[in-house]
Image (cartoon, rainbow, N blue to C red):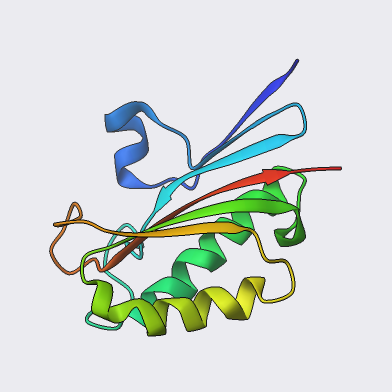
Length: 127
């Protein structure tokens, strides 16, 4: 089974040794994604804006791997303040309202930079 690594060119990919996404067979696994553009944090202090930006990056990776957002079967959402759940959920719903992947939201103590409020990973299965 062929493996396809998808890179976003992020500054940590080479240093840490990971890919933005990996496709193996009909499965696409998207790594934890934040609202860091490589040079700046998009939507600082705005969980909704960060979530929209993150889901756009995830969508781009899934498309590059040959899938589409309707192929997403699972998302995991890591948040630094669960009180932001409604803004994060609103953004998630704008992408997935009709798809309805299995989704988990977990509050964590912090992300790699203190201004990052959300990190999302996704799994897609292409039919």
